[in-house]
Amino acid sequence: MIPPNSLHQLPKKNIFRKGDVFVLFGELFGRGYANGLVREARKAGMQIIGITVGRRDETNKLRPLTDDELASAESGLGGKIINVPLMAGFDLDAPDGEPTPTELLGTMTLKTWMEDRLDWTHIEKCRQVGVRRFQNSLGAVMSALDGMIGEGRNVFFAHTMAGGIPRAKVFLAIANRVYKGRGERFLSSQALVASDLGKLILQNFDEVSANTFQHLIEGSGSIRRRVEGSGGQVRYTAYGYHGTAILIGGSYQWQTYTNYTQGHAKIKLERIAQTAWADGIKATVYNCPEIRTNSSDIFSGVELPLIPLLHALRKEGGGPWAEAQWQACRDLLADGSSLEDVLQMVADFHDSEVSRGLRDFAAWPMPNSLALADLMLPTSDAIVQMHKDRSALITDLLSGLVIEATGPLIFFESSAPKSHVLWLNHDIVARQLNQLHS
Ligand SMILES: NC(=O)c1ccc[n+]([C@@H]2O[C@H](COP(=O)([O-])OP(=O)(O)OC[C@H]3O[C@@H](n4cnc5c(N)ncnc54)[C@H](O)[C@@H]3O)[C@@H](O)[C@H]2O)c1
Image (tube, rainbow, N blue to C red; front, side, top):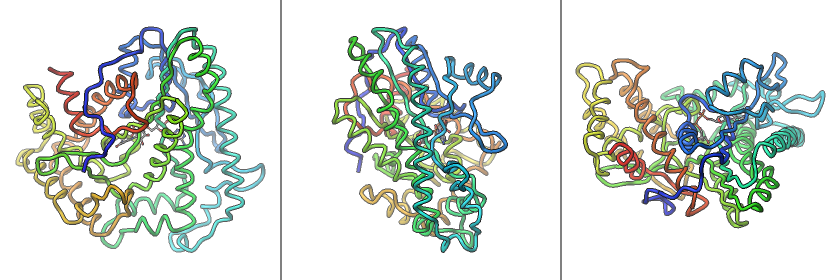
């Protein structure tokens, strides 16, 4: 199946022009999705404004960026950064003098975590402290931003925040097993979400990856009303993930990386956009394909569905440029390894019974399984081994292409968005790339 709200037409409309304001709500990393959107905003001559999540000092206290950090972040973004820490989540928050959730997790061990219980009244107090801290900082960010948006300007808010993994030793060991463990080292994601530790983590994912979008929409309410009152328009976008339709056996089929524990937060993100949309606010979650970034590298195997993008490039009107991408991928492989072999390994993975069993849209996000780990992880490792250099992978090249395509897709679609949630599948990504390079 293909998700019903998939984008099938290349968007053309553009309401954003020189002097309009583009606000990146999250930090920009070299390999991150947001680079595609920032590039489009720059091309349109928009004023680019960013935020920072801040940094933690030796005592874990949140601080703004130093002058040097700020200068380097501003030069990376190509715009001004409002230097008020907007770290979301409550893993390091607590009422004064009381333990933070991360400190509580510090007493758990690999032997005890499944039975260890948390004091939920206390956790809720910590959550409220974290949310208040975020909202207060957001208030300061919004009043600074208000002064930077001139009369008659349109504003594009691009939310990119996702995360919330607490820095607790026990969880890092567990995450390693849930996402990378096979055989004896395999750990069930279901066991994790059933535990108090897992429930806490899901709450923190919600705060970082979903609720921040709500805070952004609410916190920018007075800016929105002022801009709209003077004839301007305001858009909100967020990056979602809810599986992707890719070419499997010659036709586009929805598939997903499993286990994506963060999926519950992504569903919440879609609902936040839906509620805003019902209130007449143009907020759209773009569900994007699997790529390799700083954030997704923890999910071994997430890159497998990216490789068939090569087939989509040919299917969607690919010419010499698409062929050049095939060749560039071939050039990354070691002698004796062929691109056809790599594509066949991915095709076999998607054709396996275990993969087929996961193509259940209604059941998303599904738990992991030993059978999946024992198939997906060796396939992922074997493909990496086939390269000349582990630091220059086919999936690095293809990730860059997906970022390049999603930039204009999201930027132009947001001028007249069709829905509060839209999937960007491999068909439209490939068509956009072929069009950009024709
Ligand atoms: N990589 C993928 O395969 C993929 C697929 C679909 C959607 N996405 C989404 O794209 C968006 C960007 O992710 P990316 O993969 O480009 O990685 P990235 O690492 O470049 O971006 C992660 C973003 O989250 C922010 N962030 C992290 N922890 C935070 C916290 N505690 N508080 C506030 N902000 C925090 C960072 O500042 C950064 O802007 C995310 O919403 C992600 O879920 C990624």
